[in-house]
Length: 30
Image 1: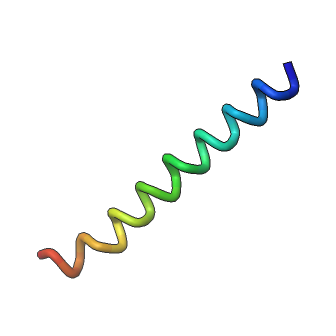
Image 2: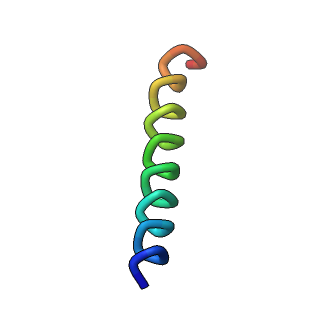
C-alpha cells in the first residue's frame, strides 16, 4: 500500500513538472 502511494505521488509530481515546463515555454512560443 505504501509503495502504491509513493508511485502515485511520483506520477502527480511528474505531471506537475510537465505542466510547469509547458507553461514556461508558452511565452516563448507566442
